[in-house]
Amino acid sequence: MNSKFLGTGVALVTPFKSDLSIDHEALANIVNFNVNNGTDYLVICGTTGESVTITKQEKKDVIATIAKANKGRLPMVLGIGGNNTAQVIEEINETDLSIFDAILSVSPYYSKPTQEGLYQHFKAISEASPIDVILYNVPGRTSKNMEPETTLRLANDFKNVVAVKEAGNNVAQYLKLLKDKPEDFLVISGDDDLALGVVLAGGAGVISVIGQAFPKEFSQMIKLGLQKEVNQAYAIHYKLMDVIGYIFEENNPAGIKAVFEALNLCQDTVRLPLVPASNKLKEKIKSFIDNF
Image (cartoon, rainbow, N blue to C red; front, side, top):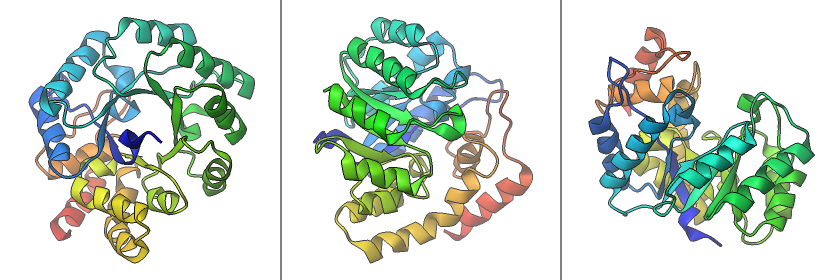
């Protein structure tokens, strides 16, 4: 089993200044905050990092900032995905992946391919990638669920397809994957609210949004879950439950950036078509943090 991806990975935000340029100082601070507080690995330029609104050069600059701040302390995963298979493969071929432990590739959005289309898309990515591949199923964003049979088919057919980040908020689907997966294949929760339950059922951990703002508590909860310390783990889950709901109440990553603003780690700026969290939501988040 690939132990690099056990525990808590975090889907890092891309902080912006008020002029919408990338705030590299804030980004480095967020990386150090996570490295120093128990996060197990870093996920870079995923959808929480607003990857669809940053340029190729900005992505290179983000990678450089995170790598410099991380100093090789934690494994790193790079988001490379999309609904143009040829373009995804081109990016894999053009990117220096030597500092990364895996790529995270989101299921094609908008196109709504058949299950065979999804299989062929990820088959092509697997064959092009020189490093491990983590599949990312998030039907609420892509409008197409990757069925467990397709995920398991990929897991069985390709040695470098090592995990799935499953984010369908579907308990039955998690359990199907956990029941039928190859022994070394990892089922990683992409749902912060279900992460502990998934771990207790046999999951490998989580790629979390809220975890980057509360790394000490969230990673401890997941560690306790992996050790089957149920009561202690759920005690932490209940403390964090409200804020997990808040950050997804309007849109992601506006919610998590509002948390970071309240923690003085970065501004709440997002790029259109996203807009910052409403004042009402910010008040709820600030109240939670003040009382946490």
